[in-house]
Length: 623
Image (cartoon, rainbow, N blue to C red):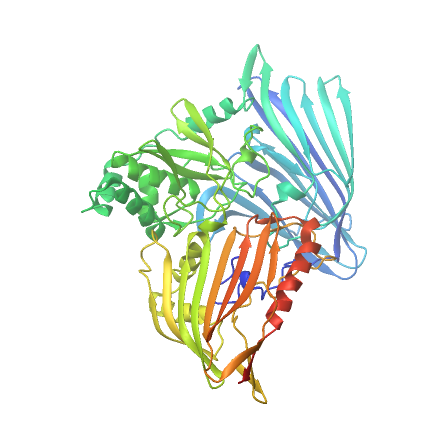
């Protein structure tokens, strides 16, 4: 749901719910062949996976070119690249090899190989061929069958010697043309598992969709162990094995503990209360360490030294978790690293694999309670948790063992967006006072946007947001709570004047009490939308408007109340008539942020009820 603060938000209902990427039907993958061969090297007792990846692209209508991209890292190397255009080897195509960057920062071991592949005319075809080697099977986690283009034909074949224990977990095969066959290669004493795939639609990029692991056909590749030379090499046979490996690569990497402690003491200078010290460290991370979002698929599972993150003032989730831990530890607190998979990932720790987690946070064991500190969630309050980690399984380091638990899940009440308005009619204008309050992820969102703007411009930008950039809606006497205090709700108070908000016909006045009209046009195109819709977080939007009636007018028409309530969401709107006053109350609650596609039709009907309410005006008539 998060867009730029000063554009209209999805939560206002003024943005379409269909965020489909532009479809490229001019290119299809006519044929693809992927061969994966496992091999146990008896000399060094390691398993390597040789890959041969061939993809043929076909032009459907008009001449074009496509960019081919292949990632690699310290655990994966590209051995050979070949390209063919209309069957002829294209030696003039020179692949480029570069570090993978985020915001022009080279931060991890990730590299990218890329080149442009021409498709000369309608019906022509070009092929990209890669040979790769994975040197650690822990990092070979999944094979996806879909692509950014429609796949007409594809073959995926895995050759696995019987001395190597590999489980293949098939996911999202339902409704797809996928056939599986298995044969035995007696010469290699290996099983060859082959998947034949037909007519797989191109991946659709829709906003607020579940991650690919929920929707796309793929296999999880789980390398358990290998035997040879009377030796057994264990990879991730159990969760204990996975944690043992995590623990081995996160042992103290030579931090400059004195430097970190000096900074921690500086941050908490003058603070005597322990919980205040903890909060100060947490919020200092928000303000001073920039998050560089290297997503899952990057091979680096070892956190950077905490003093290096401190020096550079940026880090990925691992580096930020590590620095948070070390700052707290230096002050005597029991802080620990945690491994967690966000809700972007469909798997959990019942499947030992690097694919099950894509995030690292810090746990604090304090006075008999466990608190989770995610320094990448800028401006969220201490002991509040973002939707993406709520209820997710987490591994907390505990020496040679681990603590297996879940991050607490909270309901919609955490994320309050409240507006209270007192109005009076002045001619054709509405004037009054407004009090706003934001909590939880609603507050975090606004803080994040405000802190992305130069401080001298943030006040103007905030006002522009609150007015929905409407020149007829003027805000004056604008006052906010401390914008440097993330521990308390964010509040704002101001006076407003909505010019030309009152219409007249004869002696009657037509009044609109709802300026924002949340979710007004938030409906789904039942033909176009492919995936479920995931709101960014649970929402709790509350509006109260008190309108003082002009002394010589009486209420002659009110919209009928509406009430929609189910297990996923609640909408309600009522207007109560009191002596000389109207009170309008509206509540928009998203209890379950995962709205499944089979509920879109009902959602659309409920939005139409809300829209009908919005379209009815209050009518005042002369006494």
